[in-house]
Length: 337
Image (spheres, rainbow, N blue to C red):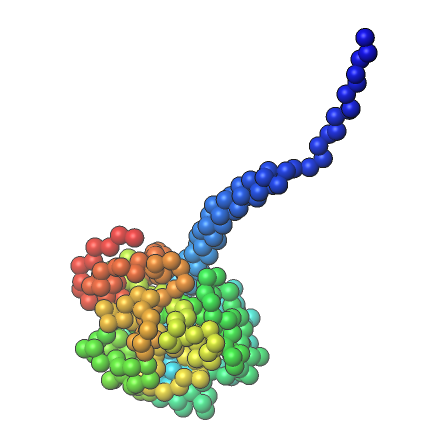
């Protein structure tokens, strides 16, 4: 009997086309599931970093208050191109060398409590335009180009604006709330003057000294609405109408009012309003330059006078939103994060 031998079996060295397509499809599905999760983690981390920035900023403001029994002046003068509260807190955010360099460069407007012979809430009679010859106007040469320094504590990781303006100043994503619209809806358009814009009428915490002859400061005792119900600083970001990424000259800077945007009534370069007229993350007309906003999903971060940081949603009740922006409106606020 003759035995027939079969040819040896060859080991398969690869996958079939169908098997490859199946594997590719599975990988694509997994990537599709993973990417949103990674993006969500990144957004959460950026939001957390932003909240920590605001927390540190408020702690610095509180430390300033401990030293001088009042919060710093929001911004000196009426030209909106002067040094502001962001500069005043430099020693309390580990930036004392920068602060000292600015002082050595001739910046003289770092006056505790606002000016000579003043105490919290009192007005004083001197024209800050006469100090230092130029009123202490921000420029990028005084103090070793201090205002051009990029400070991470003033920047939200989610923001889309560049770190510096096109003329070199370090940006900020955090501006003070000057209160609500106390002029009965007459704040006007982007470049219009605000009727009588001065710290005596602003009902926020950080106020602008902007009628030449008077300076206003705020103490904790003047926050009669309660520190847990009063916003001090909130987020700002690009919007398609006023701060497109392609136009970087006018964006707010941490040192004070952007000198590119001088002139009374242009407080949007260093302040914002919490008011039904200027809702959170509003975008599309010149009123957006008065609004707080962020690149976070569905809201923005705010820090309150008690040091708490809260995320306020775009859909917040407008009456509550307005109440949170004032220090002495006597509103009954019921707010949950």
